[in-house]
Length: 421
Image (cartoon, rainbow, N blue to C red; front, side):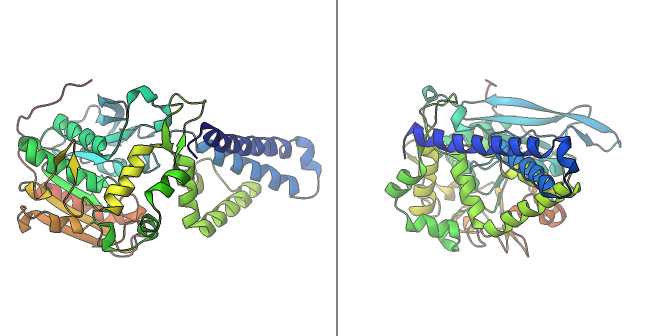
């Protein structure tokens, strides 16, 4: 599978489906079709509209669309997105609220690199902005990164987090969502051993696979069944000629999306069928519930092959984080070295991606941390998405996380900052 041809064939199929949708929309929308006493052409146009939008979103990077936030003075304040640290594979960005006094809470959201853009956390950012200064890791699409920029694996990812934390200072509160939870824990442990003065004040781990073997899911079952050789053969491709990363080995976002969709294929099929009928009846809107969800869900990005493969092998198969046997640049990272960072885990009772038990396993690894600085929360009835962006996050988890941050906040003190590149 490591051929540009397979990548380009997949992109060609996506492009063809987008074209078919646009053609069906145009054909079914001719005024003459309105004279036909049959809803067939309305359905053709509706199918085309939904299909074109669906396949176009797969190669689009979503916008943040967070333009203003209401402050204590009751006024809307303009929000701008600014890059603080720029790196080839990801940037540290800030949502700067203009005209508002700085907030005491400074939060670094560590976004997943698991096939979607950081905008997957848009609602999480929006919910925190009224009460916090918010920073986030904005990972780049591997297809757009030239081969000359080198590799990027989980050790590089961990070192990026280390640099971002150092830049923001020790009064930062880190919230890692899903995939980066074990690596955020490793980055904090790395700082505890190498630069203890730069450790964050708190670390909140939400639905992350600290110990994948603690509770089985379809994800962990797949990881245990397949060998690394098989995975490399079926999942890894070379970026085709259309993008700047031509020749780079990647795990394509379109393959990841196919995997996501297959897990709940019946639900997705029903959602698209119902949307086609709504469009045909004139009941759908450009930003209705369906489009808001799928515009984000379908926007996927490629991961570097070395990051994807090293994640599967070292986090899921050999469980290096769970066994406290993870190394970065040849130096062992000891999670037990964390003694002064309050750590909270959050899990959803109905999480089918990172099941209850996988994330809370982090607390047992923190052998040097006092029990008073450990906390956990299991949200009843919540699935994976709900614990960081849904109703469960808004109503229950967000207030608990902010209380945890306030209870363990350090007074702001001077700490070395990395020079912005």
